[in-house]
Length: 148
Image (cartoon, rainbow, N blue to C red; front, side, top):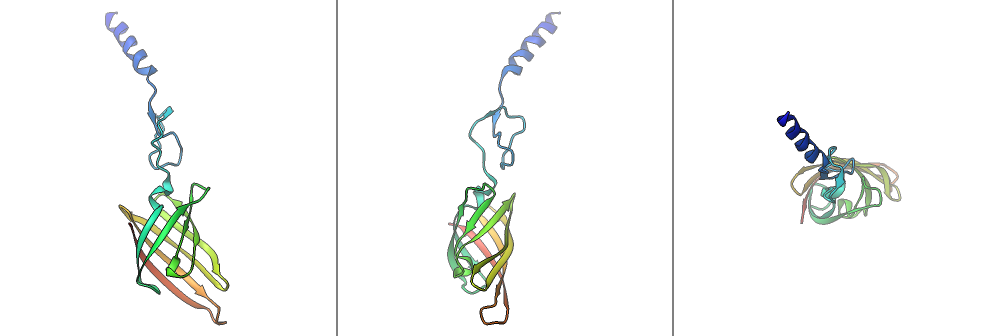
């Protein structure tokens, strides 16, 4: 009887503690057992946000790029694509980033994908279709982006 009472008291004390952690479903560190959000959530796209040094096999070998957030928590804007093409929208899922087919300049489209491959680095590959001359020219680009 004495042990049963101690067990009930211990269970009541531990049962009243509110487990805190990240309560935002879809975050990198979502804790399904957390009851109280402690502000520690890491949004999936956060690791893709920042300034990057780019090493490319495309038109320019080395240049800089900025990846910024949007209002959509799964979308980012990649600036300075191929060092000259301007900005594109990309969708982030976990460690993957996807550039869906989009027009970046008149008669130029781009699409591609990449992966967050290690701490502060992204491997990105994309295809540029340029039909300004009347004939479509396809250029495949591979980039290694290191956070600065």
